Image (tube, rainbow, N blue to C red; front, side, top):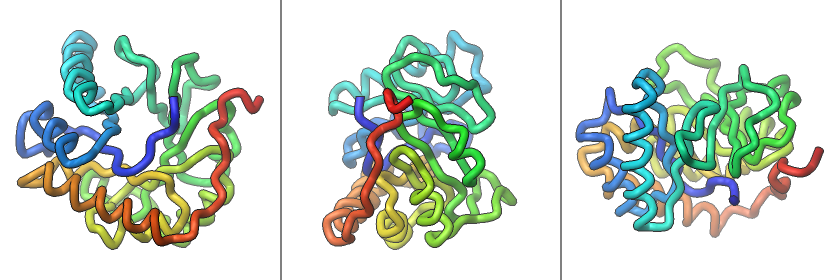
Length: 213
């Protein structure tokens, strides 16, 4: 399973302006093909049912659901926090959140990382300090696996700056969850990603970490 690329949608039903399944369907209609299910406060049976619902939506467009946390909820893709678990679970795709060189140095067989926060974010006010594109570029050069930019990314210009820094994808939450029209928001950000990726000279990317150690 390849690492995520393009616009990657993170869920948050608390800030979504519509039911979560409707928002994800809208984003998928706008070209989003990767969704990370958060909602960690839900009881497992409810979260399991939500995962099944979102997978069905994404299956119609060839998309992939990644589950935040070590439990894949009957799937084969997880995204883990920097704190653990180590080693990662043996599933088809493993991502991990990282914020500095020390956390990147702990990676073993992860397939991709998110690097955050690139900018201050309304979802986690006060979280940081912000990397900004220069810090993002520095961490990407230290990463042993492909990196997604995350945190405060809401505009096409910010998407382009992240791609220029070397990100293979851009993870967004508020820009989609809070959007009046998730389809238009996903289309706009996805178009910005595609344009930037086609015009910015690519930074050499490492292969995924699985099997390197």
